Image 1: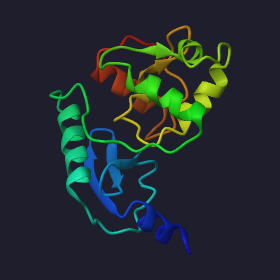
Image 2: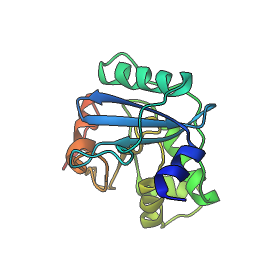
Image 3: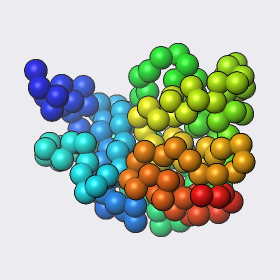
Image 4: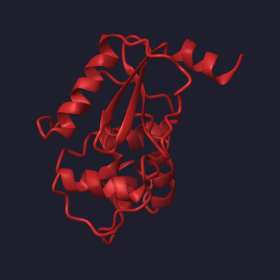
Length: 171
């Protein structure tokens, strides 16, 4: 089974939209959002798949567009995260960071009981399947720098998102 067929069977619904940071695609299993991707170098991970949306994916796109318009500060679509217990714990900490606030890799490591594991937290954050909906862009280095974002145009996109929320940071 090829990768596109595997994706279609795991998350059969797909929706896309254009945003100030590039095109975004949302995948859904029908009950929850399973993945969000931001365009990188003009490409989305599943550009080869046709749109086949559902209410959950449509609502996620509507909420993302509201976020980019400055009208939404919290997402309410259901999410399904599959990962290791450590990854899921990190993603839960990310989800708890409210709009307009930030945390650090070290603070998240302490919160999940892995003090001193900031790099491991960074690895888990990089695997966040639903960026934007779960605000991994809100995590800064201990000295307040925006680092380590792999979506869109990397740190430039992360900095734009932090600016949208009024979060002070350095690059």
